[in-house]
Length: 150
Image (cartoon, rainbow, N blue to C red; front, side, top):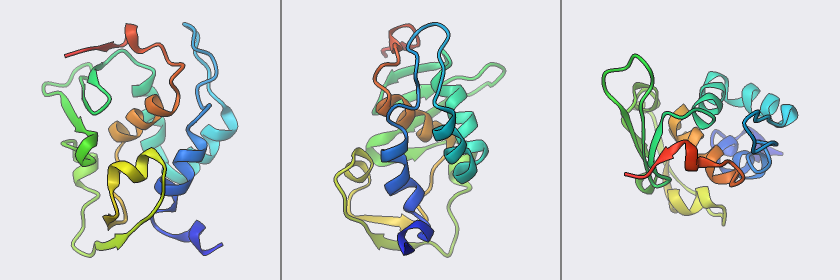
């Protein structure tokens, strides 16, 4: 039960088990699993709702390891580098605090593989990284119309 209250449990345990099957209809009128969305919204708040909007929008270019998000009205695009678990957005940068610790994690999910074994705790995350995870864990999304390969 203690692992549910760990600062990183949402990212390390809940996301890999909750994101698959989040998007239910791979058609023009995409839908999502409201139960999974409610859990993720409670735990991640506006990061999740913004990520869901980004994942379902057509503002994405690049491949899943190195994406660029360009939102309407913004001058500069946001770059996300999943290989290094990094995003240049303010939301991600504000996750870093002076009292972060390095912790050791172990697991076999895609998230564990990206993060490695020694990570900062709590693990920084933003809506852009979360959008990539939604896309990764829901391969039925037809990104050919959304993602322009660069």
